[in-house]
Image 1: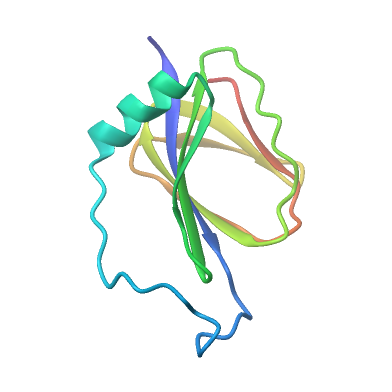
Image 2: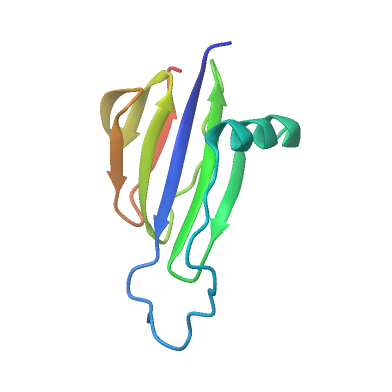
Length: 116
C-alpha cells in the first residue's frame, strides 16, 4: 500500500524547564514497528506517543490520495519522513519530500502534504 509515514515532533519553546517540569522518566525507548502497529490498530492517521511539558512526538500517516486536514500549529514542528513520497506545501510553496527528509515548519505556518 502506498502511503506517507511521518515522525512528528512539536517543540515547546519558551517554556520553563525548571520546577514546572514534572516529567520523571529519564529515558524512554520506542520501537517504530510497534508504534506503526498501534497506529494501524487505532484506525486513526495520528498516534501520539510522547507528551512531555517541553516536547510532543507522534507518528502520522496518510494513504495515497488522502487529504491532509492539518491546521497551522501554535508550536514549531519537525517532520521526519519515515517512508513514502509526497508533495509538501508550506505558505504556498511546493516541495517534493521522500523517505529520509527532515522538514522544519515554523509555528502558525500554513502547511499540508498532498500528491501522496
